[in-house]
Length: 367
Image (cartoon, rainbow, N blue to C red):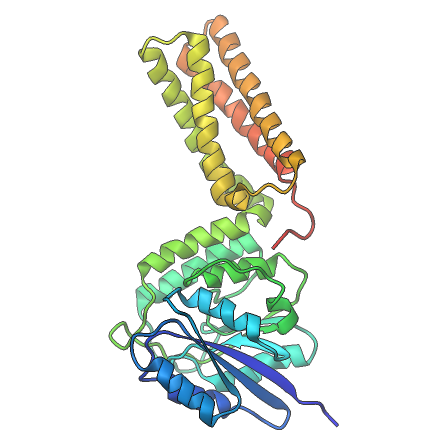
């Protein structure tokens, strides 16, 4: 006899009184003798009747659980709350609106039930039959972010921003999630790519709603998504993408190094002092951009060895910058030219030392 499996659907809810009840009933309707459901509604401090509706649903349907936040924290925070309480064999997300059809979970579950997948993405862009026409710029932004995400994660998916991401419970509950709003989508994609798991993708249906109908995502969330792609994916990205990101950061810091050097000379500082001071200014900028934002989350070093390696890198590159600048000036080059050449050498050395000494990347990175 086949043992029934349980699918936990986490439903983040903020001011969805018009659609919540119907959404829950549609989700419950997909249950079969072999598939039980657990619906976890997380009310994110709604200001309408959403919480009351959710509590009434829980009284009527034993499969429904209701959790609530005392203040509005965002979709990502609501999902974290729900994931922690999920008890099913499989876990996914069901938005409280009517854009996604829960019947598609039978399609998404099949690769996991066949033991060929651990995570399944539902793609809105794989279908070839008729569909509701989407907003061009919204679709363009979604597909653009997906392509950028793929370049950093080395996954070949078509819809990174999809709501329907289905996980084995042990997979989602082992991932440490941070994002509070819609940054959850690129964050979870990046962290799935960093662990040993099998990822599949299946076509799903999608009926988008407009801002007037209650859609909450905006262009600001697109900017945040781009940041999250860089922040969570850059440390483990393929080498060409790490080189690209570091080139942008390194080039900006090299320009700052040369500009600060010229400004300090113009203020009358001695060549030696201007050389050292401009390097320290550029090193501080590089630290903030490369370490605090991208390559090491909030610079939370775990060992004294990492601190020592980072300080050694700064010290060594400072000697290279200082020595090269003064030597080239002594050889007759203009100070600005000498500093520019020294900055290029520092850029290469910085990248190599940070990648292979300060923050070496193991086969499976921390998540």
